[in-house]
Image (tube, rainbow, N blue to C red):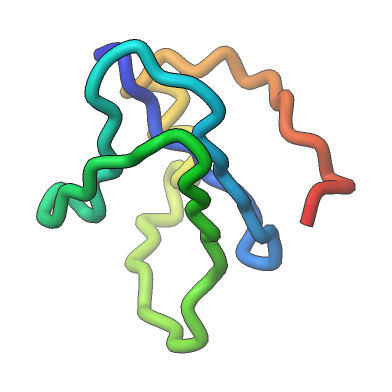
Length: 83
């Protein structure tokens, strides 16, 4: 697996800008919709106002499972001052 998910706190606001490309670059939303991107395109990502129920087993946290399944190192390189 070369593409890893990124989990950030809900209050984070992410802004992605394509600054260069050497081939076709596309954004895939939930594995369903695909949008080809061009240089200068911007994607803004914010949380959705509606909530959903997440089932928690009580044995391991979501992050414990992601660490085990995706071989995450456990070190965060997320800057908490972004957003």
